[in-house]
Image 1 (spheres, helix red, strand yellow):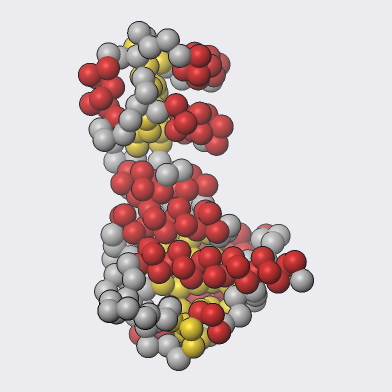
Image 2 (cartoon, helix red, strand yellow):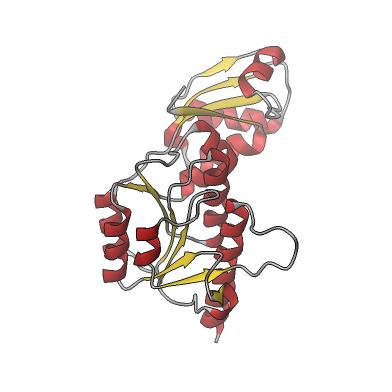
Length: 251
């Protein structure tokens, strides 16, 4: 099960068939449930040669865990993590204005999953994580990402500072998030080839990573808390970039 995950429910099954049919391994369906959508899904699975096993509701409850299954559960292979060579290829062939997210030693699978989901929604072309002291693509990450783990390329790299150098050579601006930064994200220009860099939970950016950034930005805080949750802060940064880049393209 390490390299697999289960999705449950009609919408999740339909999305898997539309977006990642090659990753579907098997399926379980309640034969007593009369539902036209399930019948369509079963026909599509059969056409792909994917085995469909009849399962009672109690069996589906067990397979789905906390997910609502609506009479159907699929098992999928996890998306593959990519490496530095694939990242170099992606940088060489990017057709749109580059937009990447870099996560420096993020260890919480829920944070990584949420960041992938926000990155997908923001149109990020790839998420870069470190090989050491970082969570990778796990079933929990994929579940939290809600399909984004299959949609957004995830690059796991050995030497982050070297990779940030590659991004600079490709013409990207490297912008790090740090609470002590002098300028806010609203004072920065994100309508450029961009890589946003966010540090680990509680610790923030490492010194060498910080020094590799072209400049740092902060999210202004007006309440009593000192900082936002990592994935929330990442979402704020990503969508300020989206706002600026959308506005720039219109003008």
